[in-house]
Length: 391
View 1 (cartoon, rainbow, N blue to C red):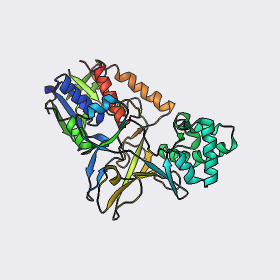
View 2: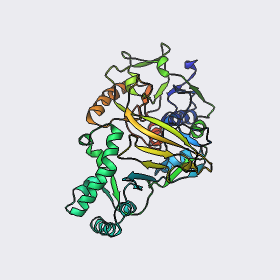
View 3: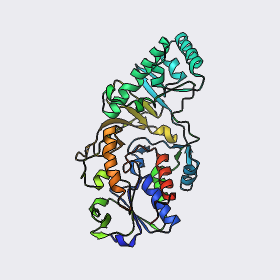
View 4: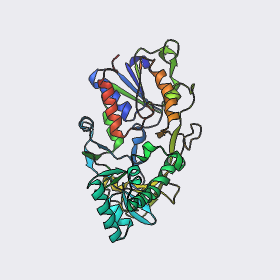
């Protein structure tokens, strides 16, 4: 591989890497090489057609939504859209109801008279269409609303969160709890952004289109660590042992880039169990959460997303687990761990990478931060525009 022919080497072909590659190629006429250790582009957004004919998301469901006009306009250059508004149900004590908890959920779990009474209390105290953090509701001085808050917290939130993050209830961060709303309306949509849709031909096709500029070369099944190394004394980047004078856009794990010299960063991983069923539909919504009884957190049925008309269906069950880089069953890092200790460990690496002027580190892994897809695109567009991408 003739690395010296390129002005920019991008490590990772997910949204962050693809957007940066396209910007350098189209806006600065740079020759860009994109490397990915997987056999495909699109990162965790990778989708494909399975043997049932169903378009499945190999690494769990990805539902695009954004309020960012620039993100929507940028991506719309590379895809047409299939309108889709995501709805989630939770199965609690055998009953399905919308999540986040709203007035429809209230009426699903309580008898009519009790539900109407609680609805009047909620709207009188907080106002119609309000979004009340569950911690605020738990602190109310109204006993009936306190009981409702305890029901929501215990039945919908606490066990699901403990499964997702592998923690005890006492270890749940208040910042996580504060994000759980009770919504005082009957809008069952999970997201409320202006733009909600799925790439008409899938995420893989979208990423391939972003990377289709003639200045861009893609190499999959290539582990960048086999070729790229850091030179700590000069703070330069070596590619195949020689100093690389171009830019490196790095979207992987910082601890891996530094060969874990300052310790491993903790992540949560996921195990996906795909099942094919000889029925038209397995469940009434794309996603059903299982907060309590099951080992998995949710089931996603992909046919709902693109409204596919097929006689059989495909679902996936998600089992959260700890990340272990040496175990092939749990060596994909999906989520950074959000606590003070892990954030402090990340900032040690972040401070080190800033000393390398030829490296731009961005994305969920490199910035150790949860990004939705639109956040990842917005972040890449902003970093490129900020001037930090200039060599």
